[in-house]
Amino acid sequence: MLIVNLRTFFTPLAIAQRLQALPPIKSPTMDLIFPARTQHPLAVLGVDEISEVALTIPVVRRGSPSTPVVTDSREIMYIEPQPFRPSTTLTAVDLNNFKLLDNSGKDVWVSAKMDMLRRIVHRSTEALCAQALSGTIAYPVKLQGGGWDSYQVIFGTPQSYTLDKAWDDNAAKITDVFKTFTDMQVLLQDAGYGGQVEIWAGKIAFYGLMALAEKVTSTAKIRVEMSAEGVFVGNYLVKLRAENYKNPETGLFVQIVADDKIVMVAQDANHRLFYCAVDDLDANLVPMPFFVKPIKMEDPSGIKLVAESKPLPVPVPKAICWAQVTNVQA
Image 1 (cartoon, rainbow, N blue to C red):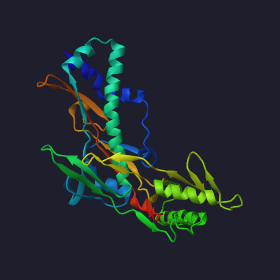
Image 2: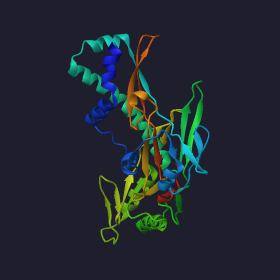
Image 3: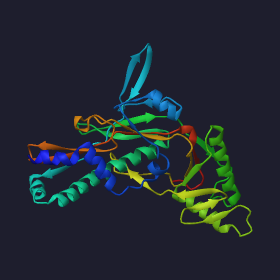
Image 4: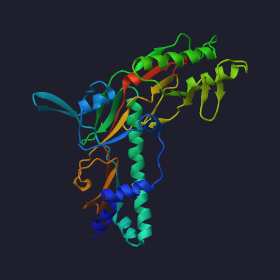
């Protein structure tokens, strides 16, 4: 009977309402590069839908299932995003304690469990979004036998820019930095983007920029200003991006932006984060950014809360430009 009671807390409507009540989780790549979210009604994405965003047809590799479907003598390729499916086990002791709670206490208990799983899924989705900035998603997939495979989707190669003079060169000036940003933005504009850009710098790159900014005198014609947001050079705002994500296979942390690099991303491009329908009848097979369901276990006796999400960030590679800006490498 208890599992029926628990299920009432985890209907699609109840989950949606509870998620709205939880505090938002801030993630730079999801928030700033992939704010456009689409809940896709199918469990797969057609490459024609992706190409409308990325303007290229993606390549799928091992661990990334794709299904060719012939319709009206035309072959259409579908890509199936791989799901995140974390879980937590509730023992019989946990459930006995749950029975003693009043309705308010049960709401708090359920919200705490959901929030824990939500944060795991959110961090994993942020990792996919961070990888997508390279033009390729290459994420480890845990196999049932205990080994690992690689889930890969290749959208294309982002643009790159080579500096005339590195920022940590003794002869470098703030005008060289301004030239870097101007030239990179021109590359994006030549591809049809770049009206509004986001500029992120790794740690060494950002410290090099700060050192150049500190040398600037008040008579400089280019605006140079350091603030809590970052460093302004002219109208360009450069933000320190020191965040990282954990590789689930190796356990190593991977930086969103390498120490010696910067990335300029056109925000006026159609970078998009798709959420495909989850493969669960209890979720009514509808697209949801996040779903949780209780599953009864016999041995050991208890209940497992299983979450699921099927996100796929789709970047526009030609609206992204990378550059190594220091001689000191990561």
